[in-house]
Length: 157
Image 1 (cartoon, rainbow, N blue to C red):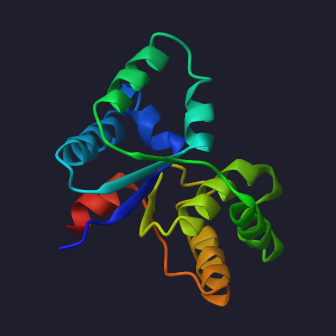
Image 2 (cartoon, rainbow, N blue to C red):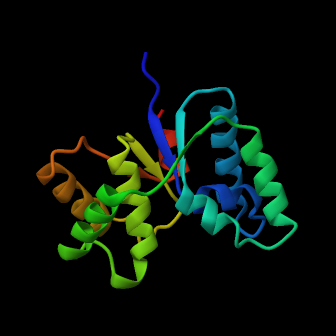
């Protein structure tokens, strides 16, 4: 059986160390355990890494350590992702101040991911964004991209 290709945005990695939201931290760590045993084909972009690098110490060192424990495909944003990101804005799927969030979605789409995982309910994991992404991706000939939180993925199995 083919593994699901899963894109992790910055909020996922960040919630590996998020004691202020223990439920999200617990679900993220459960997901991480599944990633460590190779359940998913994981994709992480340069956008995710760049955002992660702005975390303060000692959290940054911890997140780097956690990343070193998993296998993942390290990808870069490209012109196709930039084009898709602009289309998500054109149809009003994401607010103008969420350009980085749109790029996460666009990179996941351009690289053929099945799922993008995020804890960002304001800009990514919400009906408006999901509807816009589905409309654009369908029109542009891309396979469907599911937008989920780790809890949704874990409970859906």
